[in-house]
Length: 272
Image: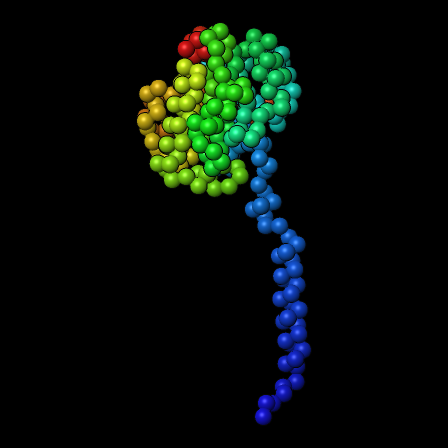
């Protein structure tokens, strides 16, 4: 017959209570990864640079062969464009759209405001290749502020393709799948506007998510993200950069950039 051992029942009750408490805690506490995911639409240019590549100094100021610029999105709100112009900023890019579900509510103040103080400006699209196709997002971008005109003051649209702030870094795409998505976006943007879009990216992301594909370099201007004293290694195919985002902590708006050339080269890109 079974032998009863003193304390066995009590230990079982304590174990059961502990199991129930642990289960209750899991139900009531959201996973940390889910809690850290920002809301859709809040992404902006360079959002993942510090976390993945870090900050390693800033370039030496005063280089006459480079032209200062900025990039902005809704997280800057209404921008003090006169302050930036007086500080030497001559060009700007403004986030227009993201995926096919978001447009920047400050786009009017930012895009028109930069133009009104004398800047050459353009619009950018934050890519989400996991939500819709490249051609579909190019159409959405053009339809929501990303177009181009040969007025000498409008830069070609830019595709912001970088780490996914909402999930897996490469948006669930294979390297060949990512290249196809980017190609579809670029081809459709050119079909709609007559211009080659600019690609904004970081070399480390480009290597990871496209396999360091070099096939876009012959026609697509490169906007490189690197927060350091120099641009460092460029993605395959590009012998030089057109623009360089070098910090997220510059004056007035945070994100500051260098155009690889004097102001007349910025004007030349705008004119096409």
